[in-house]
Image (tube, one colour):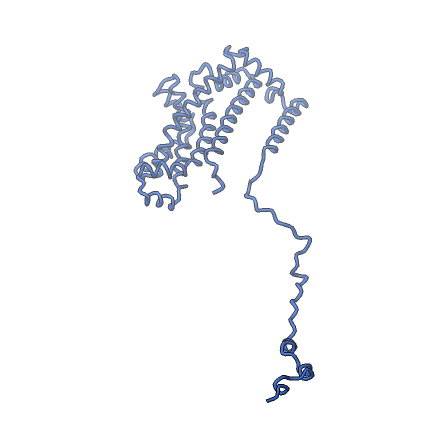
Length: 311
């Protein structure tokens, strides 16, 4: 066979379409992607939404300071304009003058203010410490044991609604007019809220935490110490704050029992002589001391239980 028959001529090669180009020509053209709809495109007016805040979250110190300043200005204005007689509402400068006289001892009885404050502080905080040392174990026991709950719950629930002045005569008959009666009266006022708060705090420990501790071999005392007590600590601290308020409110009733010194006794003695300025001064001192102790408990609470309200 001749070579020309085996080799195609250049004209024939040019006439024949190339396989690659023919294949490309038979393929369908690529489909263009649809353009995004204008309704789906982000609007320039939209912006990121701030995270939700819990009810009551946020600082309130500025509002508190503004409220105190407004009340002080209202007090000053009411006394300057003679809206209320000085016998019923003394002027702020008269109260400050009474505080200075009380600090120097120029009041009825002759005892200075710091000595009255010293004895009242010993009575209140001594009774409060005894109540905290005994009421917390009783409350924890009431929460983990039905026997302890059956024993302690009836007497606590019975005397808790009673005002201190109701059982004050009975305490005087039993314990006399010494310091024991005063401290016992304040102790009873502080005991019930702490015990009930500790009992309620036991329920803060979840079933999963208790089961996990028991599955790891924890004993009864280890369960109480490492699971139940930390879970109940926020409620216990709230009960302590409530109890110290009850202690200061009971102070005046406690110092009515033949007391010669004490803030409550100073206020009662001033009321007998119609020293309203000294009465208001004593009320301010009691409120400031109680507020300072409550602020200390809040500081301890923020560092001892930082997870409160976040978990």
